[in-house]
Amino acid sequence: MLYGITEIMALLPHRYPFLLVDGIQELDKEKGTIVGIKNVTFNEPFFQGHFPGHPIMPGVLIVEAMAQVGGLYARLAGTGGSDDEVTYFVGIDRARFRKPVLPGDVLRLELKMISNRRGIHTFDGKAYVGSTLVAEAELKATFAPKEGKKR
Image: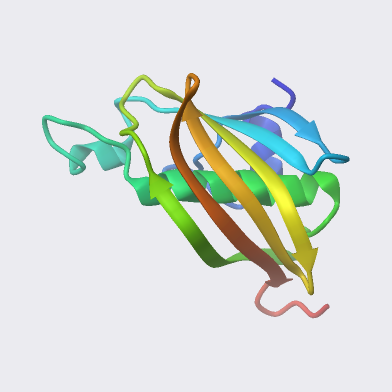
């Protein structure tokens, strides 16, 4: 693992139960790519209601996990974000959910930066379980000063 949970928690403001990245396996600044991992366990709080007797990870949380990996890319590659800034998710396009994600699955989150124009980071995100594509989306985010902070 290139970056573990301790390093991730130092870079992202998210905490349990909303921190959805357990590790970073790959980072290539030249290619603009990053690969994150989410270990999906039966203990996830969303499984209590989604769905009792047939637990499935909500698609919106798969997208959120991809977005968190994109935020980590921006911080680690130095293209955006700092401790004095907050990340705003500003767009989700072409989201598709192909297969259900179940307890025990290891979600592999692969993101490629498509562009960084006028402070808007755009990523192509794909989520896999093994070699099976389970979700994909184009994600957009920007960074802004935290409340009370000025640029």
